[in-house]
Image 1 (spheres, rainbow, N blue to C red):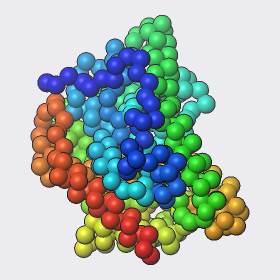
Image 2: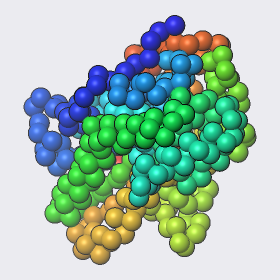
Image 3: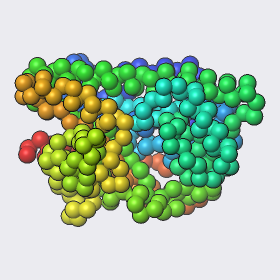
Image 4: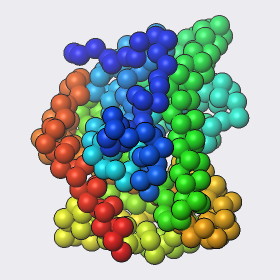
Length: 362
């Protein structure tokens, strides 16, 4: 069994490590922002776990379960795409969602939220379904309810666990959130000066199966939770991208979302319209919600400048991002993660670029 992948203790990530754009050796980030119209954020791209919290991990945690509890397929694809496409800039969270999920609203009291999530999990029992509504910014269990944390049974131990999570988050997750928000404002300022489109793209993957105790990722999700064969594009609207709830307005103009969907069908050369769905099974979460609020605040300025600001979530089916050989391996029991195929990564990254190039032509 391969060891877990850990981030060395004390590691604080830098902008250069988590921001990717084309010709970084020949262009500054300001120049990249001037040339680009899409900021890609990957809130769940990180898989390596900070060493500071390793002592609190379940001894049953394997590398496969570690990686499955992330959107790790997004990392290589978005890095490849952004390194080759001058029209996008990407920022990738180096911490896993285990530390805290930046696609959930940050709790007012992170420590209290984690403590409550732990107590609910304890009450439910190991591998038992638990309702973490309202406290799932930090999950002590995976989506198949594997107990990822070995929670201390003393108050002092629990406090040490909570303090470690809160403190270590600022070295990676906190850096990601700060840079993501700063880049958003820099893009906004540029488009208010020059006009044109700016899109915040929150990039994710989800597998249509979950894990078993022996590591096989082969338990089908409920039909209502399954991704289409390629990607779900979400703007908080309905199946056509139109407003679903006046209190929860679309984060991307519905007509533009439909054009983006058609561009993805063409860019990924799928002949089946349902391979790209809108707002199904997910409406989109905190990253596009927060961006949508900010963009509505700027609506009058944007109109005057001839600028258009949108936020959209792309949730790719992980099976599609990984490829058939990797999926077949993950469907079998095991403890290791797969080795990504660089040719497949190139193909998917190229299709992402093609889809957005086509979108710009409409």
